[in-house]
Image 1 (cartoon, helix red, strand yellow):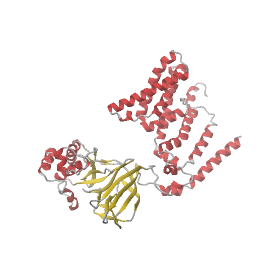
Image 2 (cartoon, helix red, strand yellow):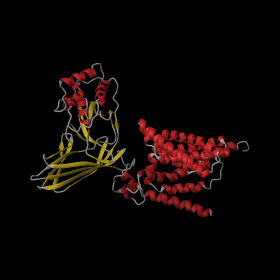
Image 3 (cartoon, rainbow, N blue to C red):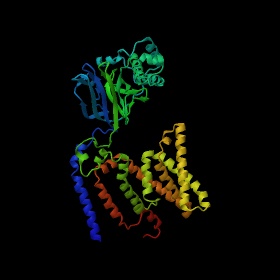
Image 4 (spheres, rainbow, N blue to C red):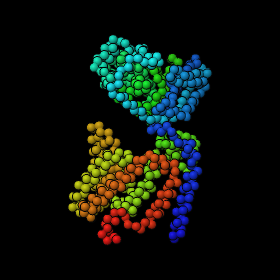
Length: 521
C-alpha cells in the first residue's frame, strides 16, 4: 500500500514537471509586456451606396501610445480601394469605390488594449509665459474654438483673477466647464455657443475648456475617440489635453476625469475633426461594434499561437465563449481553496463551518469587494440569528425552519436592492442572490451551533471560519495565481500530491500544542 502510494505521488510530480517544461518557450512568446487592464474587440461598420458616381469614405484610425496598444488590424470591403494616409499626428483610413451604383460594406476591426493613466500636477507651479513653436499652434484660435472672443476673454479673466499657479488656474477653468449642465446635443457646439447656452455635450464642453486654457496662454488641444463598452453604438467622444511640464495631460470635463483617463477610453485622433467623413448626398449608415475581450494579466490572450493553442492550457477556453472568465476563475481556484482549507483544518487546527462554504463565500467577496462582503456577511448572520431564536423556541423542524430562513433572506435582498435603487447606492443595487444565499446558509449553521454547543463555541468557530474566508480571499484576489493556474493546469497534479501527503498527516495541529502544553515534555 505504501509503495503504490509513493509511486503514485512520484508519477504525478514527474508528469507535471515534464508538461511544464514544454511550456517554457510558448510562455516566453506569449508574455505581455504592456500589461493592459482592459481588452476590447472593436469593429467599424460602414454601409453606403453610390448612385451615379464614385464615392469615398474617410475615418481616423487609432495608433499606439503609452496607454493603449492596437493589434490585429483587419480591413474588409467589397470593391473599394483602401489606403492609410498620415495627416499630421493622425492616421486616416480612406476607402474609394471602383464602380458606380452599388452597395458597399466596410469593416475595419482591431483589438484594443488599454490601461488607465493618472497624472499628478504639482502644486505652486508657475504659469509659463513662452512655449516652443510647435506648441504655439495649440494657443491659436480656430473656427469653433473662439479663443479671443470678448465673452471668452471676460469669462477666462473672471475665473482666474486670483489664481497665481498653474494647477489652481487649470482647476478653476475645469470646474466651471464641468458644472455646465450636460445635454445630449448631437450638433456641433462651438466654445462660444456652449458658454452662451450654458448647456452642452462632450464636444461643446471640450471646446470651451480648450478655448479658456488657450486664452490664458496654456497650450490645449482636443482628443477624439470612443468610450468602449460591450455594445453597438454610434456616438463618439471628445475630451481635452493640456500641456503641463512637457506632457500632454488628459481632462474629460463631461465625465469629471481631472488629469486622468480610464482604461476603456480609445484614443483615435488629435484635433478638432469629424471622426467620419464621406461623399455628400449619399446613403450612409454606420455603427461601432464593441465586444469585451478576455483580459489575462501578464499573458497576451489575443495571440493565435503559443499558449492559446497549447494542448495543456486553458487559455483556449477563453476564446471558445463556452464559459465565462468569472466561472473559469472559480473552477480553477476551487481545488486550491480546498487545499488551503485542508491545511488550515488539519495542520493549523482551525474549525470552520464546512469545507466549501468558506471557499464559496471568499469567492463571492471577489465580486462584492472585501469590505462590502464582510458587512453583508455579518449583517445577514445577525439577522438570521435573530430570526432563528423564535423559530427554535417554537420547536420547528429543521427543514421548514430553513425555508423560513431562506425566504426571509430573499426578502432582505430585495429590500436592500430597493433601498439602493431609491437612494442611488450602487453597491446595494448590484447585489446578487448567490452570495447572499450562501451567507444565509452559513448563518443558519451558526444558529444551529449555538443551539447545540452554546454561544462561546459557536462564536469561536465563526471567528475561525472568518479567518479561513479572509485567507482564501487573499489567494482568490491574486491575478498572478489565476493566470498561473490558467497557463499551468499541471499544478493541479501538484495540488493532488499535496493533498495525498496531507491525508497522511499524523502530527499535532498547531492549536493542539497549546492545549496539550501541560502534559508535553
